[in-house]
Image 1: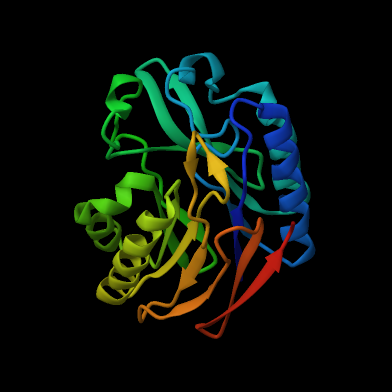
Image 2: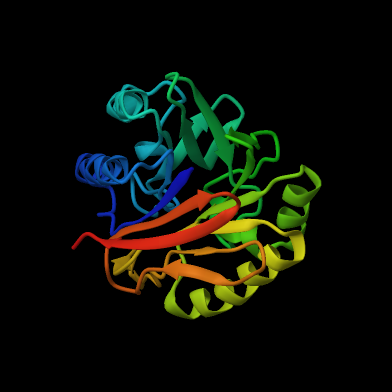
Length: 246
């Protein structure tokens, strides 16, 4: 089994360009045998607040059609982020696109300060992804700062914890310690996908990475490069590889 984390530098509000980057990195992951790829928080739109409603996606949005096609053609689970509008509200969410062309949605449960002015939080959309013999739990950004979130993943018998984030360099120092501790405490592999370079007027921290269930860092990207973190499982042993894009 092979899983991949994409490190991207999205252009805020430029959906077409950001989607093109998704297509390119998905194909690169497919060329390396990936069964799943995850992108950062709001990877399709870039991080937004004030313009969230204008840029929001619906569950069956036609702009997802190419991602769905790539999921089917490459037999790959694709996890991509955007503001998602539903009858119950506007959420920071991840689309989980499966090889059978179906879509599930994960919504951010614990909002960062200030996000509550534009988004709702919800615990209602929290699917467990099953891949081979693994159970995968998702998180978005500030979710990982709440210990309850990883604890719930453990109680659901999840073996992999995947977080789509937008963290600054300082935030990544704290995140590395936190996620290593989660991995060791709950015996879960941890995979994160972060922005690199500048976004929303802030410097992104990059350093997308994969940890073993013992809390050891298997591999990770640097702070500035776009590309992929690849994790391959063979007989319960995980090995990592980095592919720098540009």
